Length: 305
Image (cartoon, rainbow, N blue to C red; front, side, top):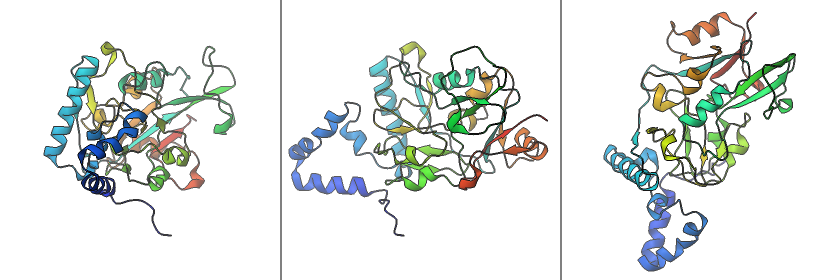
């Protein structure tokens, strides 16, 4: 079957051609519907090249511009970095369902770390309350509001599984999302067109759509930001968990793991034979969700026996 995805430069090339044909004034008028659709998207943002086409100098200019825009809007000094994958590293996560108590501390930490909109309470993590003996995600309750843990229940946090064969990447028509060498699936927020195909394709309900510009009190903004991870996202784009790559690629642990009060979360490098994640995979009976789909997740679950 012929691929329907567009070349990386296609959007920029088409718009340049339109601009040359119409002239500057008419071109600006042609872009007016975009401004009406979202005040968050400037013509400069819309015409930005794909992340993979940016030179180091391009990135530096872009990051400083975004920092300035954040300072003007929120009155906060932030630093946007772009830590690169490390050779010999493949990140993976494991979660011990025997000791997860459903407290949602992980989701709260994700909410704060990743500069999510405060009014929506958004997080990349959903914690499902499940009936013991059942692994049917569709019957899990993500909206429980009673004390936890409850008898005859267990708790299953679900987030992006950083699939080896990610269906979300396969369906993106503009290649705004891809899998990095260390296994993390990322999104170029400056290239995403908000079609939500990736959201529909993800079997783990791990993608989020920004229906509005995030509203975050200035004093709550996390200033340590990654361009492909937790920088403040514009309205109208998709976003997702990145295993806190702005932290993990510089030797720190994901925020959700640090927040877990029971030690249920295990994170590390699959290529390191001495890592804790390798020990879990080699000594516990682990499983992945929806294995039959062939997504080959890098997120594993296990029970103590």
